[in-house]
Image (tube, rainbow, N blue to C red):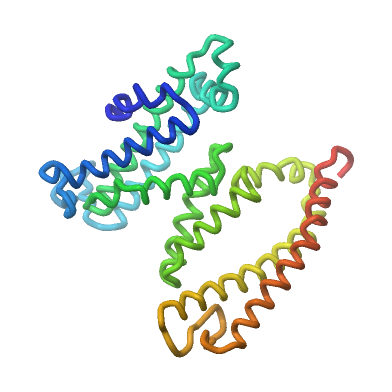
Length: 313
């Protein structure tokens, strides 16, 4: 939190893109410092620790993974409650106002800089908790943990989940971690797929997954969800067909570009990427799915508009 107060004292004087660039510059400065000042940061080897030698806490040694899991889960629960409580305070509510309309917030007597500074310090406090739990779990910190990849992962989590809702970043973190764990075991192109998911979210669902769910809250309260099941299931199925085709083509491109020969297992099939038929098959799936989504998508949107219209269920 002390570092957040130090860096926030000047970075929060600006907002928007300028603030983002300053924050990125500070993050890269710290990442570079971890390699330059190797006596303090440990250089490329990083800083290691051994949690089994730590003092006992309530009689727990945290030598087993289950104990560490419960420790992290406990602090996750406490931090989530604290963040939610902060969002309901006057400062938290004014942070939303400064984000949405800073000029109006300034007009009614609130300092943009002070609100951003307090929010930045609060974010630094919770980031410190996360960093401490990370060290307890992995028992090592390296320059890689301070680089651009770590910062980018947090941004992906926030935007995929949705920054307009409290549960958005939490949902994004769950989805990101799940896909990272599943896809990294299946393919070496998992980062590409996460990037595609991020682009699709920004282009088609800018409010994020949580915002998309909240958008359907009035429909749920009006008990009209049944009207959307048919159009949504049909559009989702066709989108899944197109996604299977795209993934198949990308995996075969990666297979051929790597100079491999033989067969490759994709989904439930074993294909030979250096033959013509798999390419034609996956291309046909892409075309069929894309054409189908283009036909059913407007109908799904129309069904949502009809279900959202005030009136009788």
